[in-house]
Length: 122
Image (cartoon, rainbow, N blue to C red; front, side):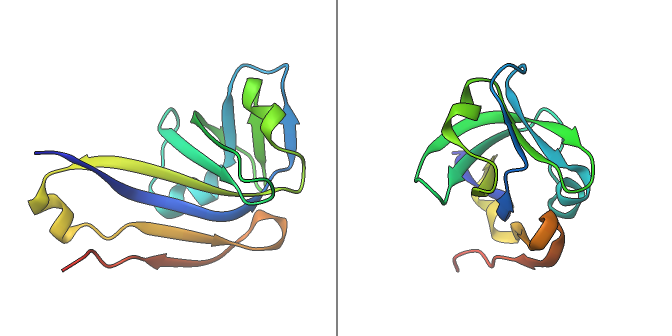
């Protein structure tokens, strides 16, 4: 059986732009993507810490410091809102036992301040 589990997370990235006129997606600083192993076109779930909105979209590669929410989802955020960006994967129990989700803790200017890993349930 496959289970949907957390693969990686970008924690508290600040929205730099909300562009409802742009083709849908979230554009994310490529350094943050690299830090957690996310790729362009990966599906992500977004939680907006400012207003509680949640939505799903896919990833575009962005320049340094960029966190842009595009398309219809741009109506759910405002520049400056803090986002939690979560990526999930389907895993068998054997994969889960060795998987350690990577989490990027984001600071001022959407810079990577720390990378941590979650331990799986025993």
